[in-house]
Length: 109
Image (cartoon, rainbow, N blue to C red; front, side):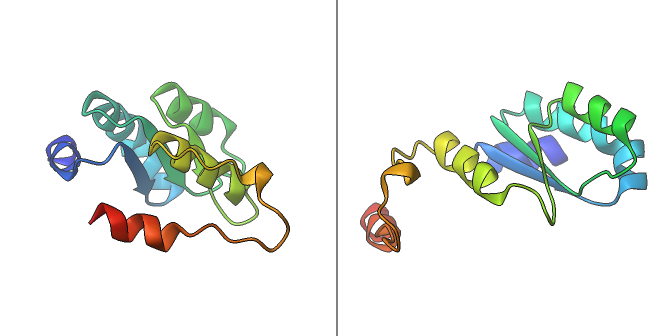
């Protein structure tokens, strides 16, 4: 059901959201199913603190990054933007300059 729902969504990005005990039980199978269904970027919500073996297994199963408080949100957003085909180089933006993403989204509708 997970893989089918993901395939029908049409998105190249997935995020697993649960808690460490559930990740230990089902995370590898879920990650594998999402990858097989076409997920190009797979994020996992949580830090998995104190669980290096679980993190290794989940990464081996296809998880690209962990999204959690204190994590590198900008790196995660850059990865998402890249997978979505964005060509905006955030390094080139001047201080306090905001890209007009609303106009771009409007044009695509």
